[in-house]
Length: 174
Ligand code: GTP
Ligand code: MG
Image (cartoon, rainbow, N blue to C red):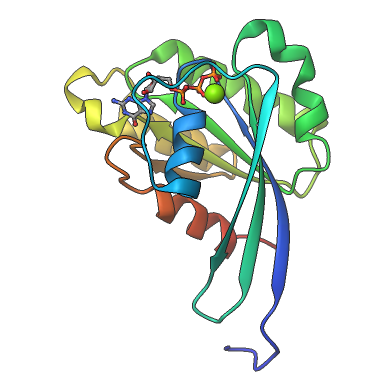
């Protein structure tokens, strides 16, 4: 690798947050198993999965992923999962302005109560539904830029940008 150091094996706690139905569980399923479930059930509490990726410099990154439940009744549980997380992936649905507002709520909550050095990614999911788009790409880009976050649009359905999301996060780890 560039620095000439030995390859590293990193372990990273990552939490996914966002409104119910935006596709958090589908993003994880696509990343971990390469599958898409059009009948995905709402998450109860949270679910845990892990996946390891190798970077070009032969560093490996093991993501320990907490996929939280977006339904309002589980909102009080969120701190249990984002506490101590190195990475937060905040997801909205590009066809839902409400879910974009909810994403902004989570960004503010993490700025107040998350780890000070947390890496945050803003994800506009369901990019395959472009004909039903109600959140402009530019809205996501600008909000992310203002808040020092990485931004990407994904589709768990078509797999578009799913691996890229996790690779970009890995590159941004301190
Ligand atoms: P909660 O667990 O309640 O927080 O919801 P969630 O964010 O985990 O949503 P989930 O992944 O279960 O997906 C909700 C619905 O959106 C399911 O019907 C999925 O099939 C659908 N969905 C998820 N991702 C995509 C996508 O990229 N494109 C399209 N078209 N549909 C998607
Ligand atoms: Mg879910």
